[in-house]
Length: 77
Image (cartoon, rainbow, N blue to C red):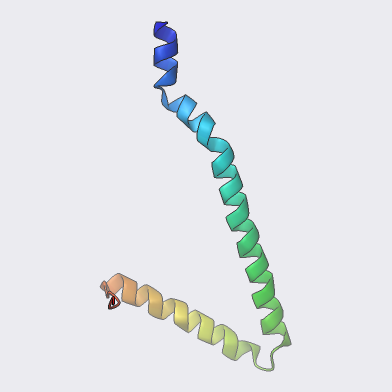
């Protein structure tokens, strides 16, 4: 009886219960990122100016990182 109470309240049981959902969620996110990455790569390859597209993407990421680092909040309606 005491062993059951200890096992029921342990973190190991909670981890075992959440593990399938965690694996499935990580798999879904990875699948979507792979799909979007391949679509972006195909778009860049087919475009007439791949360097311009890549420079714009890098610039956008840089602006987002700088604004996040500075702590800028977007206005909310």
